[in-house]
Amino acid sequence: MTTGSNTSASQVFAGAFARHGVDTIFGQSIPSKFFLSTPEFGIRQCTYRTENAGAVMADAYARISHKVGVVTAQNGPAATLLVAGLAEALTASTPIVALVQDTPPIWRDRNAFQELDHLDLFKGCAKWVRRVEDTRRIDDYVDMAFRQAVGGRPGPAVLLAPVNIMEAEQATASERSESLSHYPLDRPVADPAQIAEAAKLIASAKHPL
Image 1 (cartoon, helix red, strand yellow):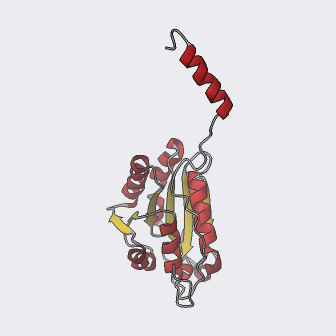
Image 2 (image 1 turned 180 degrees about the vertical axis):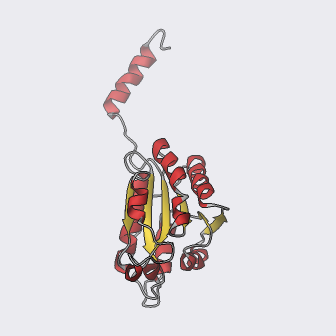
Image 3 (image 1 turned 90 degrees about the vertical axis):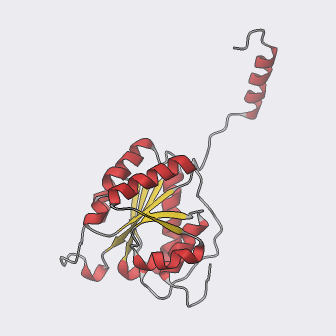
């Protein structure tokens, strides 16, 4: 990941997703700046016709690949179409990260184009919903989104990216290497001594099954 002064916010976003093993994203080229940066990091876009289909595609991808499914959407009505697919993923414990474009702060509560309260919208169908408010925190929030998606009981996490943040021409990328692309993140393991004892009992049993 480029860390110089010419690094844009969209590059930091794309680099963070790539660090977590993402190579496929289900989208419709929005956020636009994000998708202009993803090819640089080896990420391809698999286009959907509608956002509800995109959420289901991300769910299916996660179940088959055992990687986090990633879907993107525009703000407003488009974002609402993710709800059914994310609700299914929440119920089925499927890890998804949804990157949703959001209204810039200067236009909030001013009847901006397709303005919607996305924080409240996704509360009932996702494990975690946050908005990136500062370009210095992009890596932090992308990491949190993936950690929430794969940690504990897996499920969908929603990351809101206001247009002014995504289109910022300068941002700071971290030197992180942590990757949270697999799930479950922490697989419980039994006591090795008890496993060995069980193996002995099975090995010495006359009728183990």
